[in-house]
Amino acid sequence: MSERAPAPARPSGKGDLLRLAWRADRVSTVMVAATMAIGGIGPALFMILTGAAIGRIPEAVEMEFADGARKVLGPVAAAGAVFLVTQVAGKIRFTVAEVLGQRAEIVLRERALRACAIDQGTDHLRDEKTRDDLALVSGVAGGLPLERAFAGFAEVATALLAAVGPVVLLMFFQVWAGVLVAAAWIGVRAVAGKENARRLELLFGQAAALRRADYFRRLAVDGRAAKEIRVFGLAPWVLGRLDDEWRAAISPTWRSRRGGDVKVALLTGLLVVIYAVVFGALVNAASRGDLEVGAFAVFLQALIGASAISGGTAQYGLDVALAPVAAVRRLEERKAEHAVPPPPATAGGMPRGALELRELRFAYDGGRPVLDGVSVRMEMGDSVALVGANGAGKSTLLKQIAGLLDPDSGQVLVDGVPLTELDRRQWRAQLAMVFQDFVRLPLTVAENVHVFRADPVDEATRRTVMECLERVGLAKKIASLPQGMDTLLGRDLPGGAELSGGQWQRLALARAFFTISAGARVLLVDEPTANIDPAGEAEFFDGLLAETEGLLRIVVSHRFSTVRRVGRILVIEGGRVIEDGSHDELMRAGGRYREMFLAQASAFVAAPGEAGA
Image (cartoon, rainbow, N blue to C red):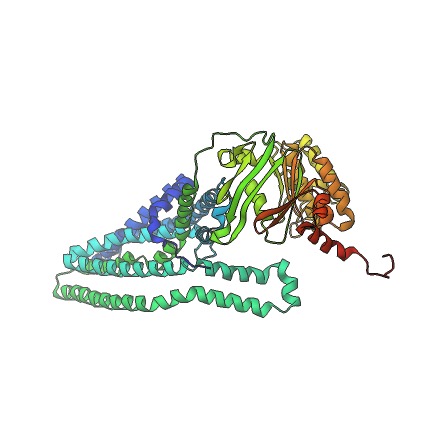
């Protein structure tokens, strides 16, 4: 698997973050900005007031206690008030920024979902760059939660504002002192920032390895894999792979630190020299009497306060937390690349006549062709089975018909109209689909069937749901659940119940029947009876065909007891349709279908002399 480095977090700019925060909550954004201003002005004002208080102490010592106390009390009280307001503003800023970050994260994740929900198909979701960016958004690939990004930005920006005052104060002492200290800190910040960006680019460039490490981490704690891991003693192997993948991903970042740390150390040494020179100048001026005690105190605090220019560790955390913002922007740009103008043709009520595949060719990621010139015409009312070895392209063909994958060449024609010219959403509304890896939603039974496609979900909808459950033979099972069709499905959910594999498959078929009740005209089913016991398979499939008479029905199955019941069978091999006909026709032809059928049937024929043969 290739490992590409996404653009580092820094080029996304703080502007993206500010726009995101403004969109998430304008009032909170204004509050954070106000507290940032207070945090920026407060330190310099505190330095001036404490310097004034210290400057009055020698004179106050010569006075009566009460008079001396009054002389110092004013600036001390003012300094205390400024300190209190600054500290309270800091607490408010951090708290509001955290909440704002959480809201901004919700907005960002919605943008990520919308960027990935490209109606044209699913090709983009297999793209490694898309998967790496999604890993950054979810935090798998090293990005920190976005909720910390705005808090980090507020702290860094406030520190920069707070550093302006001290630098200006130092320039009142000596212009060269303020310029030299500011230049030194800016240099440290620039070098550290460049090193941080380089390290982040290396870290985020290992997104694929980090995704693999996260897979092994989830595998180690996933209850579904626990049985195999424990029975086969795989725990040491899983943990070892987790350690290997994590080290492989993080090692380049560790190695890159050596050179950068040397640069920062050299600059820090230079900074120490500059601070020693400025501090010596302050002490010398004070010893000569050129600086009063109060002024000396102000300038000394300013020398310390100028260090806020660096941004501290918050700057690195901010760069890391900004990575999801940059990743979502790339996802949106990728979506724009896939965007196509709305097609002119409507797909409502189609097909009325036929669905045709013409010279269809397709390969995954430039590999060998999975479909290599498939041409077939299917009429409304046909029942068609696709058979062939694993990897022959049967499921891929269903995805082509559904418009989830676009062919490399050739066309899918609906009533003679190319699928590329039809509205994909409208076309999919004409499809009732059950794929082999159907989704098991952690919702109620009823919600798993109607999937919120009825608005509102009224009694009529609930009756339709129950009819669909009856058609797939689940009515009695659902009636036995604690809350009937309102029972949550999922053993880990409070009050939830679990279904067997066969019952889940029937539920997925009930979902397809609900779609048919809403007007779907094509039924696409991948391995419809894979989890249903053989005793009930024939009855179930006969009922499925009877219930969907008049529709175009396309079924993928490896069970020939199911396949023989359809009117037409297509044998796919090497990406092509090599045989086409009914069960009886293909058996008489003595080709590939007959060979596969007899191979499977032989397992059910008793050996000679065996009881019941």
